[in-house]
Amino acid sequence: MQRVLSVALVSLILLSIATIMAPKVEGQTNFLGLWRNIDPNTQSIPQAQIWQEGSRFIISVWGACVPQWCDWGNATLSFDGPTVAHAVYNPGFAVETLTIELISANLQITSFTHFTDNSGRADYTVTDLFQKVILPATVTSEGPPPPPPQTVTTVIITTAPPPQTATAVQPTVSAPPPGPDLTPIALSVLAVCAIIGLAIYALSIHRRTQVSVAEVGPAGTFEVSVNVPSMGKTVALEVAPDHTVGSLVESVTSALDLPKGRAYAVEYAGRLISQPDFGKSLAAFGMKQESNLTLRVVE
Image (tube, rainbow, N blue to C red):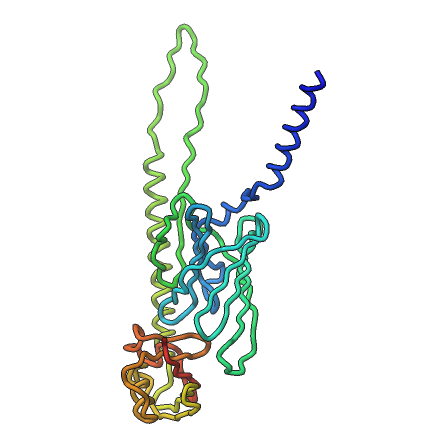
């Protein structure tokens, strides 16, 4: 009897140790999914996606660039409990430290930006709140492409089945025939109303977009100050709003006699504009009178 009690005691101790040492992953799967910022006009992070590969949790983040969102790429999450995680991004000119926290059914991301380019800009912190738009079961390791930066309206139509009325059956009285089923008619009316509502909403969005496009960029020419840290020089140019980023880079490299074979990128208002966007105009990125830019070498 004493030997049986000893074996049971040892087993209980081993089970307790295994329970204590087991990784605490309960609740971490609630991070999975596609998360959209509740503020459609945010200037920080409009969208983030979290998925799992084996034991790793990976996050993809998009920045609020113009005219399309910037893909920050992927980073591995490190957890600080079942509801708090961290991720770090390094785009080259700053270090972005993200603190991701589950708050009820929402996701809160606090981003701390520390500049490392010796530009003298002050560090800053931004906190955003997100809501889930795709369930974890539909998220793959590759992830969906970023949707266009616009508000998505989802119309959900729920139709309850008609109530059933119990009819007492008498020996000499038969039950009356059922009346016509109005459910298909009601569904059709609701569908037409939903389509009309979506059309009105899309028209209002289109009109607001036309107004915002008409207001982008000043008329005539304006001066742009470009700083080149690798040369320790600054050059001022007079350009038009429809001047492309690529032609601006060519003007700066020609003015300062910079090497032609190197890859360059332009930094403006904390955003890095790389080669794929060189065909876009300066006005497309919101540049206005007396804008200050930085020309950087991409290694």
